[in-house]
Image (tube, rainbow, N blue to C red; front, side, top):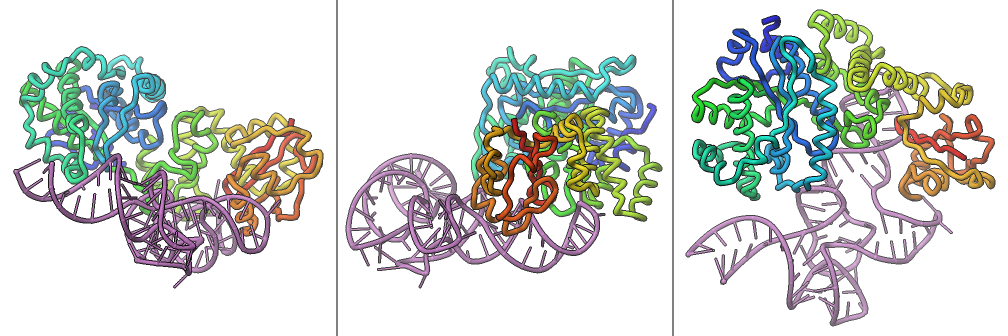
Length: 426
RNA sequence: GGGGAGAUACUCAAGCGGCCAACGAGGGCAGACUGUAAAUCUGCUGACCUAGUCUUCGCAGGUUCGAAUCCUGCUCUCCCCA
C-alpha cells in the first residue's frame, strides 16, 4: 500500500481507536471501507467533514471508499449521543435531504479513479424490500438483546426511555455493514467515536452470520479548547451548502478558530504533510498575530468546499470588513465590487421613499431592515455603543437620509465587530 | 390498575400569597484589552416612544384587594408497586 493509513491518521489526530488487526488488513491489500451519512438535513455541515476526510484519506491510501447515505437508517434515527427520542422525518423531506447530501459527497471523492473509484450507495435500496419478519429472523436472531442493551447509546437512555424503533437502530446499521461486506467486499467501517457501538454490532454480525473478517476504525470527536461545540457560529450550524452558510461566513468560521484549535484543525482538515504543518506551526508561534494557521486552514477549506473564486471574494470581503479600511474606502468601491463583496452578508431591500424624510437609528435597524429584532435590543445596542453605519460608530441622535448611501444605493449596518447587514435602497 | 413526584425564561435551577419580569449558574450578545485568537474584567440578556406601564412561570377556570406561589379540572413527564 502507498500509505500506512493508520499511521497517517494517528499523527493527524484522527484516530481514536481501531479493532485489532485493522492496520495489518489495510497494509496487506487494497480493501473497501465505508462510512454512513444520515440525511437529517439537506446539507452536511462542518462536523461531517471529519468522516469525509476519513474517506478521502482511505482513497488516497489506495483503498476504495464507500459513502453510504442512510435513506433507511434515516427513517429510524440514531440514538447515539442523543438525550431524547428523535422526531421522525417524513418521506419527502428525507428524499430531499438524500439528494442534497449525495450532491455534496460527490464533490469530495474521486469516482473516476482507475484502481479504486469511490462508490456512493443508499441503504434504502436493500432495506426497501426487506420485510420485518425476515429481518428479525435472519438478522435479529444473531444478536442478543443483552448485547444490544450493553451499548452506551442504549444504556444512557434506559432511565429516560427509548422507543423500540431507536433501540433497533444498531441492528439496522449492523446489517448495512454485513450487506456491504457480502456484496461489496467491504471490510472496514469508519466513523466518529460515537459510532463505535454501532460499528461493533456490525462486525459482530459479520462474524456470527458470515464468518468473515471485518475491521473498524474511529476518529475522536472534534472539540474546541474552550469546551464549546465544534461547528457552531453565532448563526448556528456551519453548513457546506452555500445557500445555508455563505462562503464568506464559512471562511470566517475557520479564520476565527483559536490558536490551540487551529493547530489541531490544520492536521485534520487539510492534506498538508507533516513537515509543512510543523513549519506552519513554528511560524505561527513566532508571530501569532499574522494568524497563518487560521488563514491557511480557511483558504484550503473554502476553496475545497466552495471554489477558488468564492475564496477570493470571501478574502476580499474580509479585507474590507476587518482590514484597516475606512468609511472612505467603502465609498470608493464601485457597485459591482460592493455587491460581490457583500454577497454573503444578510441584506434587505427597502423603498427609496423611506429615506426621503430622515430616518432614526432605531427605525433603520429594527423597523426598516429587521437587522435587530426589537426596539429594546436596538436601545441596548446603543447603550453598548456597538452600532455602526458604513463603518462609523453612531449614537441615538444620528439620522439617515439619501446622503449617507454608498453608491447612492447601499447602507452597511453593523452590530459589534463581526455582524454585518446590508440595506439596499431601490 | 394502585401509590408517589414533578412541569418556571435558551438550558439547568431557585422561589411556595404582596418586596417577582422572577435569586443563582451555564449559555448568548456587547464593551475594554488584543491578533477578527485565548484568558481576564465590565455591562446587558420579555416587550413597549428609557417611563412607568403591559404580557409572562404546562393548559383552562376559580379563591383573593393582590397568585409563579392557594383551590378545581385537564394535558404531559418521571419513579415505585401490581
